[in-house]
Image (cartoon, rainbow, N blue to C red):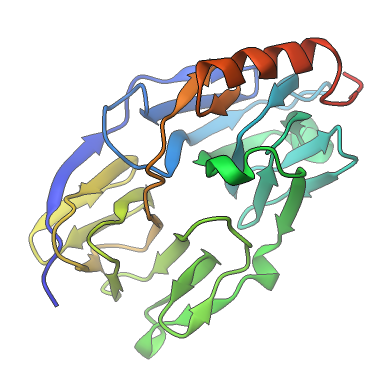
Length: 289
């Protein structure tokens, strides 16, 4: 095994609001020009306290086409509804994996009880690109509860790896994916160690959600920073300097052209124009505000 070197440890960019319920730091594609293909976008909602409120904060009805949204909850709770008839709530530790594909309308709000009480809120949302052959497939929704997530327990009760997608050692992930991606939550106790092996052609990065870690015995990374790796070598080791949570992302690039316009992620400009026309003609269905 050859060690996979760190390219950069990236600090959180300045935050902005998405709707009135999600304060996020966009690490890519706008925050940093790094290549995480097939992960097109990562909005990291660092921990924030929301005050109690009767009318839940959130994002109203909006469309998507050509990719998947993956929302991972760490604190707080989010309710989801979409035009395909899916709905659900994700609580801390849960994951919402929505395949927009040919087109869907959805809305995301703070869950009603959480909104009434307020409290800490921390989330990650990813946009995962779809290959051209699957962009116009039927939308679907995977709600993954933490209790149902496959887990690899580290030796000596030093932590665990929750396998959201892909494979970690002998454990296969909960989510079905269109291309090879690995998405894990590594939850390590202080002093806990874990190793990860990914093909060097995979684009790989670790989001430090809580705590701090030492990477490859050399580099320190603290909460709210993103470790971006070179496409060289295959072995990464981490050791927790304190109790830590790390979101692990690795995926095989989709080597196809990308044209993005707002909430649409397609392969050509013509497909973007078609997506806008289809949306304006009501072909993404209906969803009440």
